[in-house]
Amino acid sequence: MGAKKDDQHEKIWKALAKYGIRTEAELNEAIKKMKPLNIGCMVSPVRVKEGVAAE
Figure 1 (tube, rainbow, N blue to C red):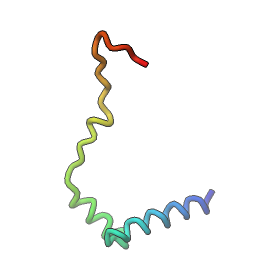
Figure 2 (spheres, rainbow, N blue to C red; figure 1 turned 45 degrees about the vertical axis):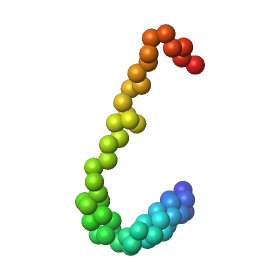
Figure 3 (cartoon, rainbow, N blue to C red; figure 1 turned 180 degrees about the vertical axis):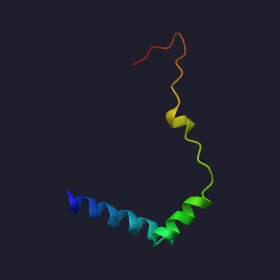
């Protein structure tokens, strides 16, 4: 299981490098500078209209 985890970490760091993030400190700084992300549409309950059949 350790090798799989290492592969995932490698892929993540490779993706971050495309954005110029190569160290943990650079990643932390990028996270601090991020604008807030509204994820309400992904975590809010779905409203169901009356008269509409659910599949």
